[in-house]
Image (cartoon, rainbow, N blue to C red; front, side, top):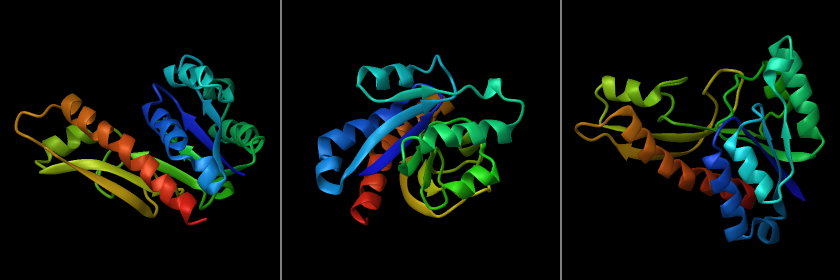
Length: 193
């Protein structure tokens, strides 16, 4: 069985899109893949509550309980490894991961970022794209490396920026594309073995 562990921090809409796609498309029957756990660094994460309602294994590990980023990442890796993951998917997990953590899951650690990488790494991507006068924005699924928002690009979705766009309106349109892009890329990875 190819176990998939998803890491979230907030509402978990991309996690939800992945779970729903896995069920709808029969990932377990087609590729022997299942979402085995959802882990959050925030106990109040709405996405975590939704995952529990779906009968998924969940865990909370607050980064505030650890003295260092390295200590948190080591504890997080122990929780993840308990699910024997083939893939670890970041879906709105708002923590910068240490190089040691990234190396542990090298090639199996995937993220979705709300910009057309390599443009606009980090935060405030929609505001920055509008202020730069870009004609388009979008989302990128990529392999995670020790360098923030870098790594092999696995898929992108392009969203036009229209006159009068606000960061919030653009973010909503990009998010709707993220919900299609991320499951599509993961399904392709699963199909490749």
